[in-house]
Length: 107
Figure (cartoon, one colour):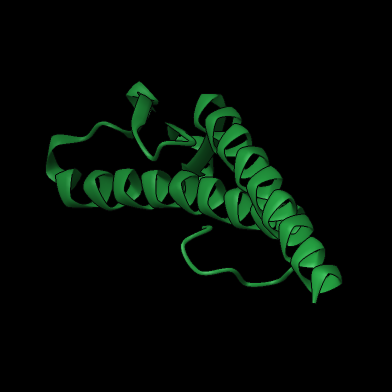
């Protein structure tokens, strides 16, 4: 019985360590930047790991008042691409840290 309590304590310490590591990784990911682009680079977006739009660059040649809808679509595509890159990186790095255990609430 005493041995199983020791094992439980070890598991608890390991879980606490993993929780600290995940918090550190989330903080580090939040500081990183992720890029996305559309229209062959005519529209570029940069988001943070916290999924916030930081920068939006539009090539002046892409601005044509008669094609506002096209520009809107390019902006949406670029932003969504940057957000997707942030999400994929976050998932991959968290999964690497958790050893693919699929722990709830850890992504």
